[in-house]
Length: 324
Image 1 (tube, rainbow, N blue to C red):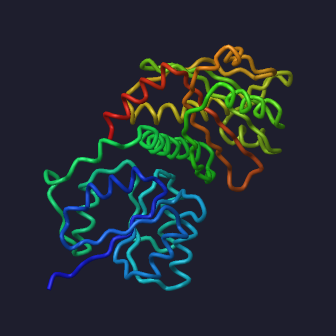
Image 2 (cartoon, rainbow, N blue to C red):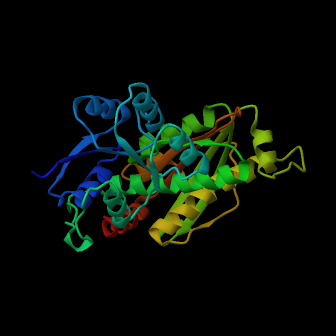
Image 3 (cartoon, rainbow, N blue to C red):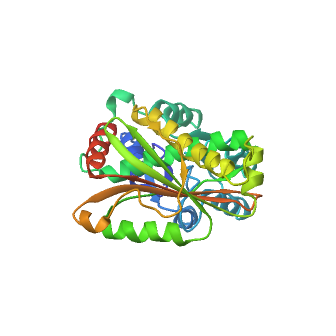
């Protein structure tokens, strides 16, 4: 009798669930299970004899690190393969210390999964047998995963410069109208901390990044990155940090979308005026990507909001349709 292997895909992205299903659903001896967070994943592990767990790290409710700890505590017998956009060296080391057998960075090719499954004794289909994903995939879901990969690359760049582990954020990718945007901009301006604005453009995508830094270790964070303050009346360190946060994300986005971006010099925002009077743009919509980087051992947080106008949304949608 053919032995069935239970494989659990634990990831908060429905797009990843569909992609993994596309890769694995032609395997006759595999039963697929799904979880959107670590809590659901733990429940599935308790209910089913899972042979292989494909685990994301950055998830709501319970993240991948916590689930790895729970697996060790409860002595659950399963092979754990981490599939994560967080490609910091420290992330891989921590996962292995917590019991993960393998670590694969996103994005990944199906051949990587198949070769790994072969080592586990699970036969896999030929790549030519893969089914195409559903054409109904929401482009925002694809863009969210692209943004997640870009954030992981950005975190790795910053971590390498800093020598500090960066907590990977959950990106919030959405479309918003002008009135909602106005509220968000007001909150950014009114909250404590320094706000920076930086324009960017590339491949028909026009946008602006708003960066807000707060915490008592901003200067120390900048110094570790090699930035220095020359004029006390200016904010060189702040603008340099903001520029690194924005450019590292855009560089990674360029790799994935094959669009080179250029950025303008960042400026400190005293009273935000960049998007004009939103009351005259009531019918406009904007695509936005929001996230927050946090240094693990420093009192430093960086909130970033990327805004792209209506014409840019059309371009992004077309690009995402080619990716899924």
